[in-house]
Image 1 (cartoon, rainbow, N blue to C red):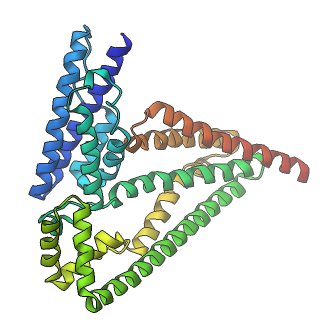
Image 2: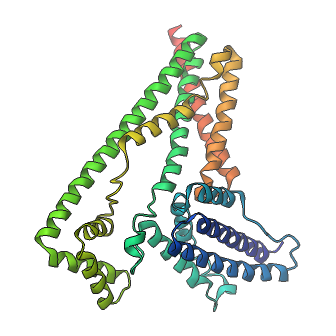
Image 3: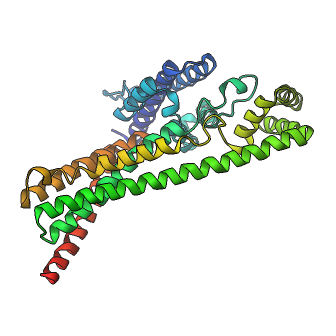
Length: 370
C-alpha cells in the first residue's frame, strides 16, 4: 500500500469513528437541542468519510474500513449506557488534537475539511464547558461538564495505582524470603493503608474545593446585590466574547439579570467555572470511590497468597498483575486514541520493572539481615 493510501485509510477510519460516536451521543442525549448538534457533527464526519473512501478506492485498495475501531465502540457503549457527558471530555480532546490534521494534506486544500475540523474542536469545547451561546444557554448549562470522562480516567488510574504499588510491596517482601503468612498480611496491610490514604486525600481535596467554591459563590452573590449594573455589564461582555453581537449580548444579559437566581447560576458557571448544583461533587462519594478503586487494583497481587505460597504464589502474582497492568494500559487508550497494544505493553513493562526493583532490594535486605 502506498503512503498516500495508508494516510487515506487513517483519515477514513478517524471519520468513521467520529460519525459513529456522535450518533451514539445523539442517541443518549435527552435534550433536543444538543441532539441536533451531535447529529450535525455526525453528518459532517460522514461527508468527510465519503471523501476519503473515494480516494482510497481510487488507489485500488481492496480493504476499506467500514466500521468503528474497538476504542470507538467502547466510547459508543459508554455514551449510550451512561450518557454523552461521560465521553465528551475525551472526544473534545481528540478534536482539539486533530483540529489541524488536514492543514498540510494536499487533497484537503480548497475543501471544507480543515475548517470543519477546527469548527468541531470549538463546538466540542463549548459543549464541554457549558458555553453554548443564545437562548439555549440557560437550559443547557451544567449539562455537560468534564466530570464524566475525568471520572473514568480517575477510575483507571486509581486501580493502576493500587496494582503497581501493592505489586511492588508484595514483591519486595517476597524477595526478602519472608513467610507466606507474613507476605499475605503485609499485602493486605498495604492494600488498606493505600486505599485509606487515597480516600482521605480525595475527601480533603473535594471538601477543600467545595468550601472554596461556596466562598466564591457568596462573594458573587454579594456583588449581584451591591453592583447589579456592573454585573450585567460583565454578562454582556461574556456573551459578546462568545461571538454574539453587542445588542444580542445586552438583551441576554438583561434577561438573565431579571431573575437573581438565574443570574447567579450563569455567573457562577461562566465567570467562576462552578456548577452551583454540584460544587465539585460529594467528598464522601469521592472518598469511597477512591478507596474501592485502589483496593480493586491492590488485591490482585495479594490473592495468590490466599490459596498458595512460595514460588507458585510469586509467579501467579506477577502474571495476574501483568494481565491487569496490560488491561489498564489498553483501557486508557479509549480516551487517548493511542494504540492499545503499545500502551498496554508500556504499562506492563513499567509495572514489572517496579516489581523487579523492589524484589531485588527485598532480596538484598533479606540476605543482609539473615
